[in-house]
Image (tube, rainbow, N blue to C red; front, side, top):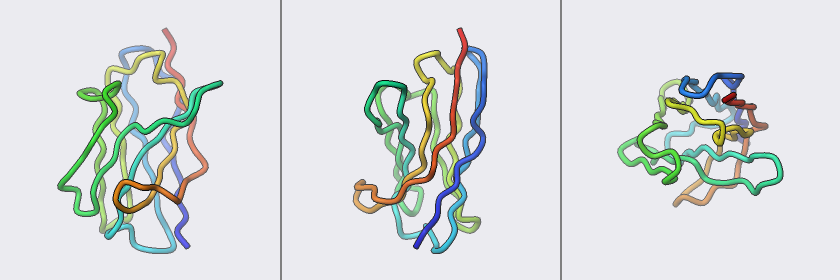
Length: 117
């Protein structure tokens, strides 16, 4: 059973940057798609970014395209989300997820990101 632990969240001013990390344990993430989702207060969880097992393919929500970058280090069993040009509307709890064929079924506990205006 895989465990996912996110870190790197915090409080940042609009226009700033944060880098989220997701540490996986219990199994190698190499064969799996990995993704980042977020949930703002009063809203449903939404997809942010995803990356294929090899890292060759990445995909993003339109709202973060050009500002966020997802990456992975399979040797370290790690996934990252570099977030630049942050906006107040990016404020949410961010979750790391594992899955196949872009269907995710394992989740971390989340890390809070707060962007002040």
